[in-house]
Amino acid sequence: MFEKFREWHTGTLGGDGKVAYTRTCNGMTSGWVTGPSPGPDARPVPILPSPAELAERAFEQLVLPLPVPRVSPDVQLADGRRATVVGEHTWLWTEPTVWRPQVERVQAGPVWAQVTATPVKLSFDSGMGQGRTCTGPGTPYTRAAGLHAPSPDCDFVYQRSSHGRPGEQVRAWFAITWSVSWTGSTGTAPAGGRLPDLISRAELVLAVVEAQALRRDQAANSALSGKG
Image (cartoon, rainbow, N blue to C red; front, side):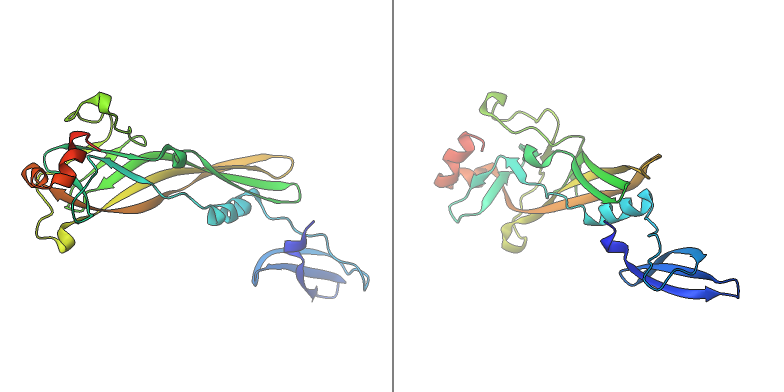
């Protein structure tokens, strides 16, 4: 049951016949216990980690999903580049499958801790020095919203094109901020608290073009009429 905590070292204390035991886990001393000298085949009772120690371990093991960037307009130019349009409300959202709490649990004997990361905001870096922070995952665009309508909760308006930038594109970023907390128990008493926020990021490479340029690009023109 306590396989992870079975590395022990001992040393005598004075002349009283007691022995000090140190618990070593992954090369680091993490606890002490003293007691009578055991027989040659006896082992000391393991010192269990605290719920807070297990919470730290669960925090380190927690794997968060990356945002799945989605925008509209999202048109394909004749040269294959993805593009949005200067002056349009570019709707921003991430796939809803990643917008859900993520949980990691660690247990040692009766002691356990569970870390929960909850998504709280979606941030957008336009790649041009401005951005937007939204309190949810954003709303997917549908044709029913209208061609030039703003998003109800998360969009960005590019004021200039990406002309002159490397590849005639911007490198935009989507980021999800996760609020992290933990709960646990010693087996007899509950425990819990807060942990630092976490952020997961994903890049989106995008051209930003003038509407006039799109009208000259027949392949993109039909896509623009459907706005994504």
